[in-house]
Image (cartoon, rainbow over all chains, first blue to last red; front, top):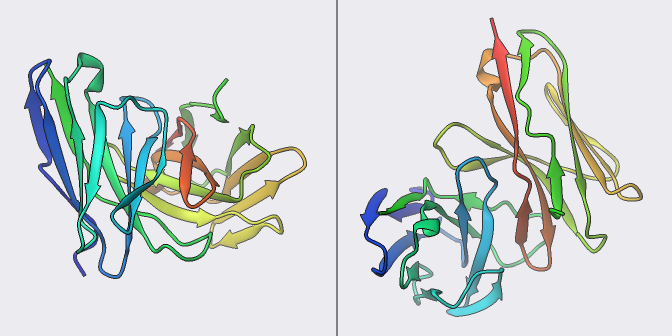
Length: 114
Length: 109
């Protein structure tokens, strides 16, 4: 079982550019959540996708958008990049049923905006 | 005020010590509670879920006090490999996880 995989692992972008990050969930998982983790902080919830729709959203601007595909994989898109978007972006997958099901995280994509 | 508050540490303890971390959360509608562990430049991994009755997993004991909105983690007989950041996590409505900023633990020989 490959677990949660994210690509790319590292990325450098220029302010104003757009970026797409990708996530493949753990086998058997149907829900994908995205988190942003700034240095020295805990992960912050961006949004969650289930059945190809955004189910919940955190406190992030519309520049952050996403998509989930029929095979449950997901993309996170960020437009008009700001220096403050530099962070580790984590994808977590889980199963939709039950409250205490474990969320498994991918290794993350480290985005640097210059 | 952050929704989940933790002492950032670092806690610097010798091998074999017992160390306790505390966490408070502000939203009484929170439904699920966890401790995650995050090694340097790695992804968070679930350490244990936390229940009102308290639960233990080997050297780790977690407690939840819903009335005080307080979560704790106790690590007994600390090992060098326990050095990491411990994230207090609260779940609200359909798996939205709210993370604290983490408490850093350094276990020295």
